[in-house]
Amino acid sequence: MQAVVSILLAYMVGSLSFAVIMSRLFRLPDPRTFGSHNPGATNVLRTGRKLAAGLTLAGDGLKGYAAVFLARQLGAGEGVLGLVALAVFLGHLYPLFFGFRGGKGVATALGILTALSPWLGVAVLASWLLAAYMWRISSLSALIAAALAPLYAAAILGFNFLTLTVLVLSAWLVMRHKANIRNLLAGAEAAIGSEGPQTK
Image 1: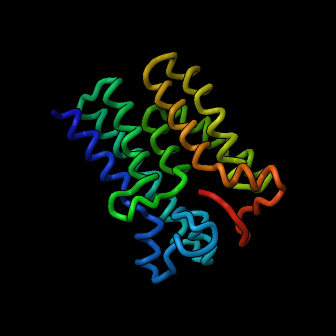
Image 2: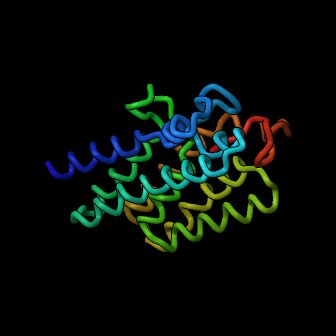
């Protein structure tokens, strides 16, 4: 029963869409109505309110971290921990409180990976930052980091259920970027901070 409760709570925590919450607190337009129509930090940044975007990024990352960290503190085994990670990620993608219209999951995934292993989080974040520095495209950076995450997980965690969880998260994240992939192939994906289609 504790495992079921932990998984359900993780989904509820994941359903807190900080892009929408912060936009309301800062009296900004709903991020689902402009730009990429994606409720994430990159789209909130289009309003020019860096604090709101930063708080969105921190909130989305923290909820992923907190759900997994707390489950581990409560004694969750490897299997339950993996399911909690998937549940909080699912909550972000399809939030119960916001019409099941969620974000792409980049920040939340990073929080989850950091809770599974700080070194895993550092490796993935470093990959994102390096790609962002080189190409200045958020979606491309996310896709590169997502592709590398399962490899890092296998090296750091070994071949187990948690590594399989990371593989599923990465595949899910890539699927959420289908429109961005089309834009990248067409050379139409916008740079970080611009007004065109973006992700986060």
